[in-house]
Image (tube, rainbow over all chains, first blue to last red; front, side, top):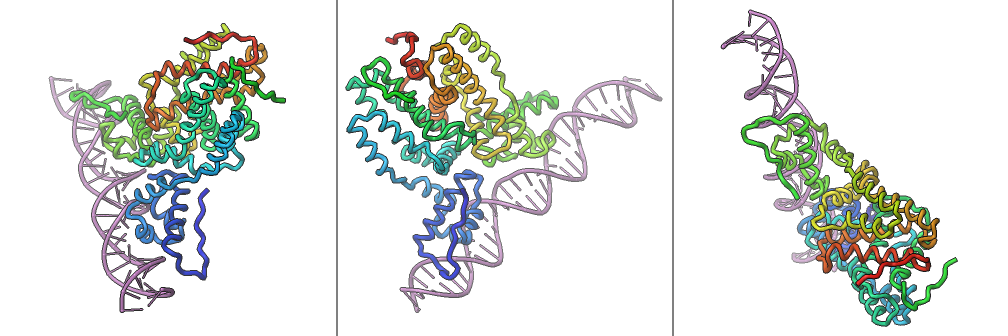
Length: 216
Length: 216
DNA sequence: TTTTGGTAAGTAATTACTCACTCACCATAT
DNA sequence: ATATGGTGAGTGAGTAATTACTTACCAAAA
């Protein structure tokens, strides 16, 4: 999880932007591993293979470096356009499976989840924005989709926001168990995704005319 | 959340046990609020209305004090016997509603949840035990109940453990949103509990002969 | 030569933890 | 009644190490 940014021995200097990006990446994994108060600027410098002074040349304070990390946007356009495509075809199963697979997959990196939780627990001011970009965007989108499917009669009349949160809750809890609490899994990620999607879709489709694909 | 242990002005000394319990309670709320590395022994002493030296008379190190907090058991017998009662009557709705209401309720104290998350993120050795006592006990019990109901034909053939985690995931996510990320709620706790229980029961009862109580 | 990338060696403040030391209280011997 | 000595509760003033951050300076490009 923590890895030093190796620098080539013969190239003495890196460009300013490279260095800055390197420091951000290195610090992000340290903050994710140990939290804000648990990480020292000395550790960051050492892991980034430079002096503490250089870190402070790029970022006025430790908090500013932390804020720069939280403010970084994760590109999600690829996933969202693919989901949008499935949504247009009204392929409920695919929509939910894609979202679930994006969160639950083999070798998932717990860094962002840990950053998210640490920032919220430690009460950083940018925590809310980070939460919105990383998490809320999913269940807000999902709530919109569910609302539409209810109007179309494909789902029963549930509270769309609560239903979306329920589904995201299953996924978040799953990640919490395995990535944070280190609970060993007795099923493959794909099996888990399928189970969660089945459970949820059966819940929202109960009593409607929607056909459920049978499982083996 | 954080409150100093007030001592009466005329009674100069407290008994050893009282002091120890007071320090534990005070430190627990501080650790929950700011984490282990984010809390100083000076703050703990000040909040407990005594000197730092006295804190170290009771606990050899800061970590030992933290460990004493995590090792404390929360009495859950009252809830579990009540749930056991509903389980005997095969009142599925009541079983799930009681468990959900215990987690989601007005004025719920986020202290234990914060301690749980902080201890896991910061990687304390006792974190697993704390997790087991605080959380795992619920979904392990629930998994057993679900397994039984499947055998009885009341629930469809789902993976009991995954199903139990799904339900607990809805609740954990709900608490995370409101108690940690401070997302305002648009529904009452009771409404949320009802929605979650309905959604879940419809999911596991789909295709069985189980009757679902209609909602307004 | 000026700008840029980089650092060694500081600083004052804070950290967990220790030590030498009171003080109140209480049973018992005088 | 009162002096005696023991004990547990409690603390002020430290300690060495670590913290975030600064200053003065250097070397290699441009």
